[in-house]
Each structure stands twice: as structure tokens, then as C-alpha cells.
Image (cartoon, rainbow, N blue to C red; front, side, top):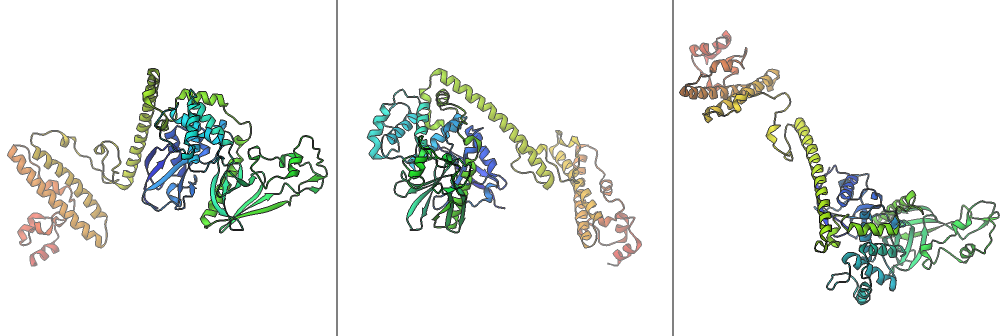
Length: 561
């Protein structure tokens, strides 16, 4: 599994946050973190997070997989973008001001990047003017903008005429103008047709369209989702099967001929291949059509195909089309599913003063222009948010502490991320926890004696543990554990000797060394308590004095040496 990656997430208003993505973090959890950051609660289904490849193509994170398990760029630092993934038929479907403003900022970005296109004329000038009014209020000189040079004079003049237009109304008018564009909500891909001509293939909540490569305002083909029968790709070829609404056959049917020949309202004047004179005549109020004899054949399907430069791009087009079609089938996308009227949205945005979005306020709110009442309201909101964040932080710290303690119990090592004082919970692994007398941690006049007493107790615990391991071991490893046990026992005796000398000088009761060592020796010989260099090597007298329980055979061997 890959390691953690430092990641920067860019938002639609130009702000950003830095996060450290762990291997176990799912894409859905990351998106929920972003929603919490932007105060989006109910309109989550319209947004997503994507990254760009070397060809500047967007790849949306799969919410069913972990972030780092996906085919991300190999760079050490990761750059992700938050954006509108699925555009709604009408912005009145959005129930939150933060979502409406996010859609507004996406429209602004798409307009500057030529993903949203208008024919040069009053609608384009009006849209730019409304954007300036929404971002900066009434006309001001010296405002930085990204308006094309050939449109500046006309747009500025339009902006002057929007005096006293509220920012909320300017936002709503901008979105309404965008919704009337055939390129609204399109995700573009560069493709070629069978004649090797370049085109832009657009995929959106409305369907799949082919746009002129030089001018995206010209729609050369448009197929709504209702017309499409199938989508598939193979290597560098992407194909769609389209229901041919122009072919009529003789048979009895209750098929709704008017529904299938209805030309989408948003594409009047833009479609060249999806309608003809017959379709237009059928939809005329004065035309009478008998559906008992004329209807559509189930086999009236024809195929359109486009070609790309790579398999990954073809797959990306297919995945985007599938996801957009799923979104199209959602119930809230049908007509009449409006949560608020335009007037209600305008009033809500004006009342929020562009503060409800939080992080978007950097681009649209000027604190110096707030009235005392507005400052007071803003302060109350910030205090409430501060309390909420503190409560969340406290909860997360408790969860982190519990997780660190659980990891410590499993591994024996306390993670450095443990919040607070780690000394309060430090303990050894399971089976090696030893209690220390409380008096050892009280204040003593003699610091040296106190430290030695602590060391003696610790070494006693170590000797006991070493003895337990030695007793339970078998085979060749037993000899190694035996030597470790003898070494620790010898160290204990030295510490006790030193402690006794200090206590005698202080007039305190000394510790009996031989008894303390014997507590850990039980029925072992003296060789189990003292290392070879500390034991006398010669003389029967020394051997007998030190170990009265040693066997006769062993005594004789010692004397022969």
C-alpha cells in the first residue's frame, strides 16, 4: 500500500487547503470533509473532486474507492480540484445558498476557460456585467478582471447600468443566462470523426453533443439521453447508438409520437441533424397524426462514432457519459422539482451577504463596508462556528487518543501523534507490567538515594522477567536467556551494594543484598545469579560458601579447573 501524500485542494473561488491523505482515506470521506469546509449539507450529489492529467483532461475521483488507490499523477505532491460534476436543469433545484454560489463560481470559471460559450452579442456582455456586479457590487474603477480586451468597454458600460442591483440578483441572472447556452454543463473532449476532422465532443446532463472545433457556440449534432440506445467503446473508438426518430413504419401502436419528435427547447436554432421538416410538422398544433397505423420501429437505430488519441481518453469519455446518464435519471432532475423560486433565492443570498459560504467570502465580502449591525451579526456567527469547531476538535482528539492507546496495547509503542501527556498512560507490553511502590515517586531529601531506589525496583522487575523467560525456554536458546538472567541479577546486586553504602552513611536501614538476590533465584544455583567474571574461579572454600546447594559433581569439576 502506498504511503501518505501531501495534497492541495483548490476551490472554485481560488482558495485552497492542504491535507495529508492517508492510504486508508476513502474518496467519499475526503469529499465529506470538503463539504463540511464549504457548509454544503443537502446538495452533495452535484459536486465532486477531480485531478488533471498531462493532457489537461479531468478525472473524477471514484467515491467507492480509496483516494490513493486510484490512478493519480505520480508527483510527490498531489493537486486536486473541487467542482460541479453534475449540472442541474434549473438552479432552483439547489436548496442551499452555498450550493448556488458554488454553481455561480463554476460558471465564472467555465466562461473564462471557454467551456461555457456565448455568441458575441448582448447576452455575453450582460453575463460579464452581472459577474462583475456579483463579485464587486456597484461599479468601481481599478477593479481587476479577466474580460477579453475587445469586450471591456461594452461590459463596463453595462456594469455602470446595474447600479443598485443586489449581488444576489446578479448571481441569479448570471446563472439564468448560462442555462440558456447550449454549452452549459458540458464536459468537453477532443475527438475526430471518420473523415479525420477535429471536433469537441460534449457530455452533460442533457445528452451528448458535437461542437465545432473553432467555435463551440455552434452545435453540429445533439443527442438527448432519451434518444440514445447504447454507449460503448473499443480501444480509441467511442460509439453511440441513436434511436432514429425520423423513420416511420406501418403498425398498430400506442406509442407517443409527439413525445419522441419533440425538439428540446434549449437547442432550437442550434441543432442541424436531429430534426427535420417532418418532425416540425408533427409538432404543429394544426397537424393531425394517426398513431394506429404509423409508429417507430424497434430497429430504427443508427450509430455515431468518434476517435481519440488514446485508450484512456476513450474510457474517460465513456465513464463520463455513463455517470451523466445516471444523474439524468435522478427524480429531482425532472421538471417541477424546484425547491425555491428565483425571488426566494435572491432574498436569501442578499440576506446572507455572501457570508454563508464561509470560504467564498474572501472573493466577495469587504469587511470595511459592513454596517455595525452586520459586524455584530458576523461576530455572533463566528463565535457560534468557533464553538462548533472546538467541540468537533475535542471529539476528534478523544477519538485520536483512544486509537493511539489501542495501537499501543497492540504494538507496545505509543504513537508520537498521541495528544496530551503520554507519561500518564505509559506501560509495558501485556505480561510485563510491574507495579512500583508509590513512595518511590515521592519527594526525598536525598535525590541520589531516591534515584537508586527507583533503579533497584526497575532492575528487580527486569530480573523477574528475565527469569521467567529463562525458565520457560528450551533448547539452545535457554543458555542465552540464562546468561541474560545472570547478568541482570549481577547488576541488581551491584546496585543494592551501592544503595546500602549510601543508606549506611545516611543512617538508614540497609537492604540485605543476599536475600534480595535469593528472591529471584529460588532453587537455582549461584551460577544462575552471578556472571562468570563475578564468581570466584578457584578454591573449594569459596564455592561452598557461595552456593551450599551446588551438587558434589559440580564442586569437583570446579576444583579440577
